[in-house]
Image: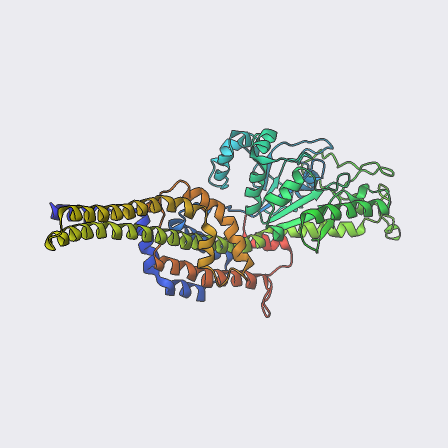
Length: 543
C-alpha cells in the first residue's frame, strides 16, 4: 500500500503554487542580479519584467491581498473638481472637439474614460468591467450603482488633437458641497463609495488634475474628503489648478480668489509650503463684455479645432490688457495652460516611474507582511510547545510521584494526598496553557505594533516611510487575521524572504535607474530623440 501511495504521488502533477515556489527557489539571487546587470533601457522590457515579478514572486507570497490582481495597461490621467469647475471643457480642449457636455449645472453623474482610437466605440459599465483589455475588473466590488455610472468613449480624433494614442483621460462627476461622513453616508449620497472609487483611480493614475472654480475656491464638503482621504500620499501625481481665471473683472478679484484657495488648502495640507497652484483658463472663441462668462465654442464639425480667445485678435501692443472678455492680462495664463498640457502628455513617461514605484512599494509591503506573519506564527508555536511540554511533564511526574510514595512505603492517605496535589497542580498548569493559547489570538490581533517594533527596532525611529507603510498595511492585517485561526497564519520560508529582499534592493533600483537614463536625468545621458512630448509618448507606446 505504501509503494502504491508513493507511485500515485510521483505521477500526480504538482500544484501551481508549488511550481511557482520551485521556479522562485531555483532562480536564485544570482539570476536576478545577472538580469539587473544586463538590463536594457527598453521600457517595454521593464514593464514585462515587472509583470513577471508580480506573477511569479509576489502572487505566491501575497497571503493578505495586498497586491492588485490587475494593472492598467495604458497611461491614465484623472480630472477632479467641483461641478462647473471646467473639467469637461478642458477635456474638449485637449481632444480638439466637443465630446463632453458642459454647463454651469452638473452635466455628468458618473465616471467616463476617454481614449483615442482608430474607430468610434462606446462601452457601458458592465461590459467595460468584464473586458480584460482595460483592467477595470476590480471595480466590480463597488456594486451595480457604480457599474451603471461608468462608461468608456473611444473616439477618432483629428490630427491636431493633443491626446496621443494609447492614453486614457478619466472625467469624474462634479463633487458636491456636503461632507460625506462615514461609509453609509457616502453610499446614501451616490449609491457607491465615491471616495474609495476615486482612491482606486488615483493609485493607478499617472497624473491627477484637481480643478477649482473661482466662484467656489474652497476645500469644503466632498472636496475636503477627497483631499484628505482619496488623494492622501499622492502629492507627487497631483496638480492643483485654479481654472476660469478669464472670468475675473479686476486683478484684485483674482488675488482674492487665489488667496482664498491658498487659505483653504493650508487647512488641509499640513505643511508650511503650499504646492504650486496652476492658474489657467479653457480657451474660448466667443467674447463678452466685462464680467460675463465666455461660452465654449459649440462645435458643429468633430474635426473643428478649439482655439483660445486670448490668442485670437490680440494685438501685440494690446497684450497688457488681454482680450475683451477680461480686464486682466491673460498671456501668462496661456503659458500656464501649456504647462498643464505638457504635464498631461508626460503621462507615458511618468507611468514607467509609477510602475517601478508601485512594484517597489508592493514588494516592500509583501515583505513586511510576511515577516510579521512569521513572527505571529513563531509566537503561536512557542505557546503550543509550552503546552506540549506541560502535558508531557504531567504524564511523567504523576506516575513518578505515585511510584515514589509506594517505594518509600508511605501511608496510603499520605500517598493519596501527594498524588492528588500533584495531579491538581499539573492539571492547573495544563488548563492555564490551553487558555493562554486561546487568548493568544486576541492578544496578537490587538497588539501588532509591538511585533512590528521588535522586527524593525533599528529603523522604526528614523525611517518615516517604513512607519507610514506599516500604518497603511496594519488595517488589512487586522481584517485578515480576524478570520484566521492561529494555526492558519501563513508562514514564509527564509529563502523566499531573501529573494524578495534581493528584488527590493537590487532589481527595483536597476529598473528605476533605467527609467531615469531613458529620460536623460543622470549626467551624461541624452534625452530621447525628438523634443516633442507627444513624439516621445508615441515612441514608448506605439499606436
